[in-house]
Length: 399
Image (cartoon, rainbow, N blue to C red; front, side, top):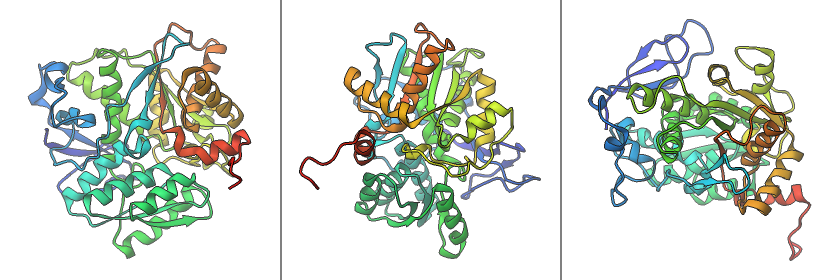
């Protein structure tokens, strides 16, 4: 496992020490301050193949996302078995693969980022962590904080899917339900964190959730035979996974594991009821504007303004990708379609990706020969109440 060389600002490129906990860049001349990237000394890996470094021993204690420990911080992990999720090939679309992140602990991709963030929090000796969440990050923080004996303080909208609230409470987290959306929750954390002694592990306001999420990039490439796909469809609220995967691609190219210049087109998928990144992309803007009256049943996409929007937009343009909005009606139509015809119960966010894929096939942006990875970011069963409401279903027992 490598030593962290420094933390680098994504805006001004200043270098900060990783010896103590950091949140955002302290050197940025302008506001908002830039999110930080973890940079490693990887010289010991130069000239070594991916297969040699990662290995393929199923009996190894380093499993799941920790198989990529050579490009993760040199610390003892807090792990519940996250990562190495299935890559499922569509039976109807020969070029489409579904990355099933619902197989993670707590049923979503959030397990990756929070596993790494809580691991580093324990390493630094932090005792109280706080996060605003649209739902799945709440459950993931609550679980990993419980495993690490750290206090978790969670703020989430009152109308989150029931499973998110139940799991956070069951794990013993301190949960506050807020009348509003995730940006309202973030404001409360920001106002209280100094007084309460909380360390804020909000999306991109600390550097290690990106490190956990980047393992999705390593994984999808390894599962495709150490080759890039043509495109990646990523449901985008805060966008940490998209940012993390792009960082993984950069690292793999630096190590010589992949050829530069052939990265996949990145597609950021949002709901038409909350599409700030889509609007900014279409306007040619460098950052998004706060989306007013955000409304979508895909709770993970109800993020009125992502802190890392400027990074997301840069990645979309650099990759030749785009931001795509789909309606909630199309989301739930695709959810039913994939359940009935593929045997996969998507989350609403995952169904946004499949709906967008169908749209881009129909409009000729992509064709069936393109090898595409679609991310289902959470298990559909975590959204039973939301999906039942969308499909007009009631409890058969009358409850």
